[in-house]
Image 1 (cartoon, rainbow, N blue to C red):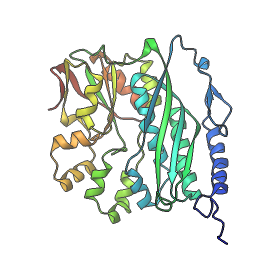
Image 2: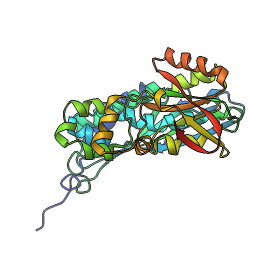
Image 3: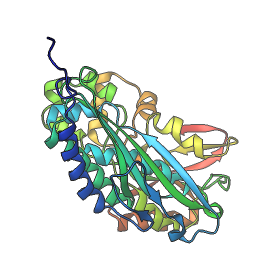
Image 4: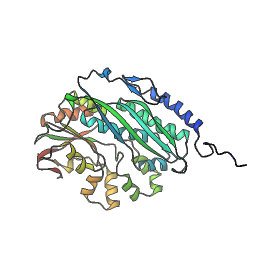
Length: 333
């Protein structure tokens, strides 16, 4: 008589997953915001947008992951910040059109559920949601033995934001002579790690270098929401994959260009170390990494000082790194 093959024998531990859900519920409750109806546990999440008193509310959506930065987390054994990166990659996209993130969901897939590791990852997600002022309202945990190796895991995030139609930031008011303000990054954020993993050995990434570059992505939501109360922000660009060259032109009219003074970009030394190891030129660096600038705002020249001061209130350094000019694309001068 053949032996019984249960789901647990196949490698999926439903009981362990239920223990994780119990932990998630507690963390999710700590992120609640006005509008959340119910909590984690159902098949979907409900949200009341009337709580935000918008005349013509628009929903804004975003999804992203953290790429191969996950391997650095695995090599260092530190998993409590990668969730912050996940939230940041989504909500920093939402804020570029002026939207306030209100809800967040995650997808966590692993070969074998490691409760301590999983709780650490979800804690980071909850911390990121608190920084962004949005609620963790649900998600999916998938145990996939044979597809992922042991406790190897992957992450994806999904966020929804709200903005009044009259306050959408779309770049159409950008004019020649406007100031380009760069908001400092905390390092590489979550882009370029496939290249980084080529120039550093696994032993290096498992040590101090790995811990340094694991610094989580800055979440710019609350500082930018405060800035929107102070000045007219004409456009915002989240500097992710594609760096300066591919991201900034997305929020500037086609008939205008962006001139960046490279000497004003505060690039940390570790970027130059990667540049030397990879034998890259400046163009490739500025097209691959954020080079020390995680977000760019375009404002009128008269609003540049106020923009910089507002970001300083949130302990984020900001710099006037360039201007809007005739032409097209980005020029690093």
